[in-house]
Length: 167
Image 1 (tube, rainbow, N blue to C red):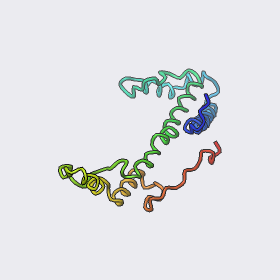
Image 2: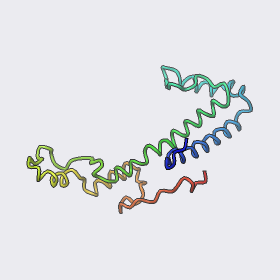
Image 3: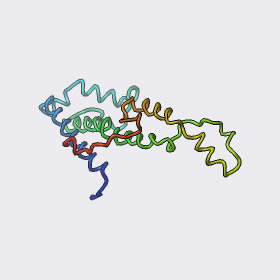
Image 4: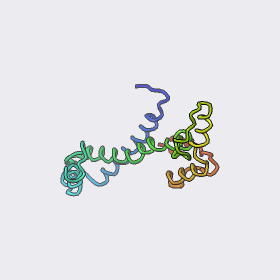
């Protein structure tokens, strides 16, 4: 299916495939055959504990690993979820939350003081619903672990294209 401009899919597939190659190389380095995977007690214990209703109870996780391909796919999926998918879902939050009107974190006045006169409501909202720039910057620093680009000056660093990483 051709979907020009759907960068999440285009860039995401590059990362997914790179992670898959890494996972395959890793498994190939540890196991010579499917039988080696099936007889690895640690891997089988991981599968059992992860599917046990009294422990992790992860639906869809294999109850055992019988071949290298299944182990590769599980490792690929776990690495993807904690890297590419996590970044795609969470990194855009900075762009939204950095602009205070998108998500005011608190009111500086009680809603009971909201004017009844429609002509005054807009000014009241701007004065009382927008956080001060210093409070917004403090929240951004805390929510990004202090690593957001140039928060103090409210300038965002350019995002690097995935091609920069030669995937």
